[in-house]
Image (cartoon, rainbow over all chains, first blue to last red):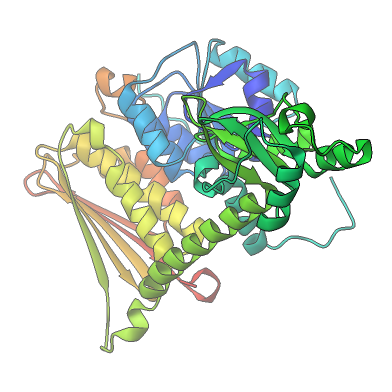
Length: 124
Length: 319
């Protein structure tokens, strides 16, 4: 799925200039826990998150994520946008929620990159 | 999805992607021809014909004091010749409804205009609507090639220097050490050191997979230093031709029960850290799955030392 289709399906708007809309995205991950993202996500993917701090961008860069969507209309800090522009990582803001964006993308054929966490420890 | 076309190699794909990227990065102003020959509307078609011949051009914008009024093409010239009216003015035969490009627009926008409108040239206007240049498809091709060439030379030079580092230096054992001081609670820079390490490894010719796995491991280690230490700590990466050794060490408070800390999902991170998206209890687990060797040593009086190794064999070498 191309970035342009993701933009359209998520009803999002680009926060960084000149993203190449033809970049191919292979799968997606939705979540707010960065370690879970790193444990699961494959390269060339979309990361959908409710967080908006610069670590989201740094996590995305480490994991070779190609595009980030900030859900629920969250406007990330200027610092976050600045880092994304510097690193040429396209970021999208969408008014839809994590659940709805994920559902829509899945319905349009973009597979999930979320993996089952083995031996999850119950810390409570 | 399947086609009979020969498969594109990764290398070729990377180059194609770069050209596409450049089409977004380069602006029309950077690739256009800025010394524009232009016509006045009150010149005769005969004068225009002479100008076309003299400058060896097949079209020109028509302007008065920088304000674009139209464009005169060779087709307009032919029409006037067919009518036998080359005594009429440029204003009589020019196309007044002109498609223009903006100087600050990315080249990709101009390419779309060319495809959509099938015109041969686009007059370029600045933000004050003044004519500042003219753009043809060959301007774009030349601009892209030039940018690609510059890009390639710069990157080649850096890559060459970096990847031949070990060959150029004669010693029994050469290593390159990168060191980063990580401060406790410094969330705004969290992950910066790891991203620099990942970039350095790619520069040195590591494969994307190796760079990614090392990146994830040191990123988790970096966040642990930020979240869990008394005073922060140090990330140290030692690069050798056959292995990458990564270490994270601090001076406390130490981990009371290492086997518990290694359990997936076990976390001692406070709520405010979790709200930032960290402290899921997956850090050490992630590290273990990314690197070939991992050793975690900790004592309550001396602090923690995390040791990680990635081996580079023939298939996972520095290229």
